[in-house]
Length: 115
Image 1 (cartoon, rainbow, N blue to C red):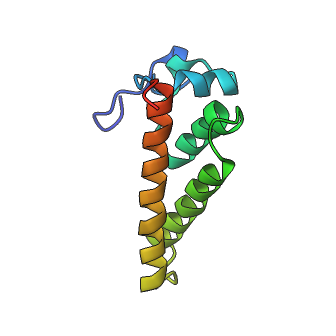
Image 2 (image 1 turned 120 degrees about the horizontal axis):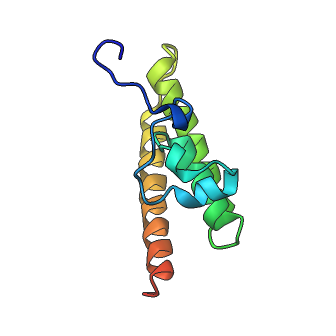
């Protein structure tokens, strides 16, 4: 234990076990046992959508690309002192975020047999 933090179990190879229900398909796609994965990033969400839906023709690859694009922009905004989004860029990001959420709702409804 270091600074009051308990390290992950040794059998996990230093990775905190996953308790999120959406991760097993990612684990299946990557070959990493789900119990050793813990999703904590937008990158993992994009890879999950890609492996589970886009690669199977259930989601347009454009949505994964947009998620990656805005993840990169968010990173630049958070960590690059020279990055400044314009008002128009912010409005466009909000518009695309709304469209993304609508598409994800549609995907979930289709998956659950409601569409």
